[in-house]
Image 1 (cartoon, rainbow, N blue to C red):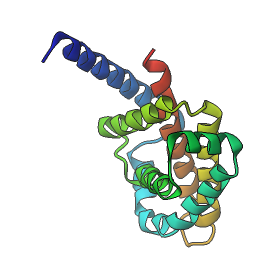
Image 2 (image 1 turned 120 degrees about the horizontal axis):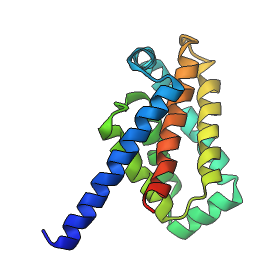
Image 3 (image 1 turned 45 degrees about the vertical axis):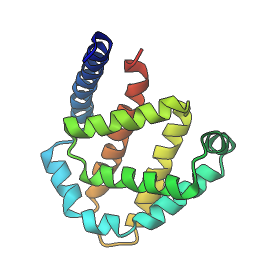
Length: 170
């Protein structure tokens, strides 16, 4: 391994460690713990049963936004690929370990957003659309109401870590 590669690897590990430290603070702030994640995962199948509807509506919101359309056009992102990525994100909210591996996945997602210059406001609006549609769709199935705030917290935890990626790399 060259000196340059070793330096990049050390920088990468340093950023991941900072993100993991932030993730722990964010979990504490939002009240995400093993008990709340257990409640969320107990409802996993019911929540995922509505994933197509949630993703479709979030994608509709994104495609109605001129700024998002410009980014999609510039990057060549197809509707099908965007749908796949949204499904991955939605599943990650529910199945992620909220651990170092999860942080690493969010780091990569955050880097992808930074690389194509997705503005913070669009990331926040998309998370808001996910939250809105998830809550709407869950109102149509028999899920425990105590899952709603946990899902909200998890969506925002994921967003905060994706966003943190952009300023930790500086």
